[in-house]
Amino acid sequence: QMQLVESGGGLVQAGGSLRVSCAASGRTFSSYTMGWFRQPPGKEREFVAAIMWSGGEPYYADSVKDRFTISRDNAKNTVYLQMNSLKPEDTALYYCAATGYRGAMSTTTRGYPYWGQGTQVTVSS
Image (tube, rainbow, N blue to C red; front, top):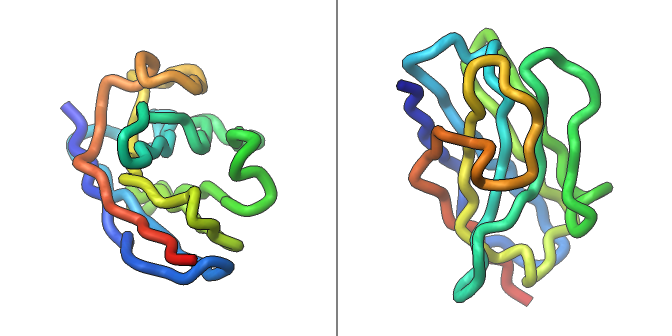
């Protein structure tokens, strides 16, 4: 079992930046593809970004491309999401997720059996 704990959420003004982190434990972090999802108020959970266990280019939702950056530090068992040029529509509960062992990149929640509890990001206008 893999445990995921998000941190770093908060309140920020539109145009500002925020970095959220996700600390993993319980498994060999470097062998897991990691993803970030978000759930805006009253809406379904949606894909934000993912980074493969094996390296290579990360993948982003069109809505965050060129504004958000996903990265990972395997030595610290942590994945990050740097969010710049934030907009009010980025307000959501942000979740970290992990695939199965050496899992393929996925943009759907079904591709990720492991989930954190989420961290709230609120962007004021």
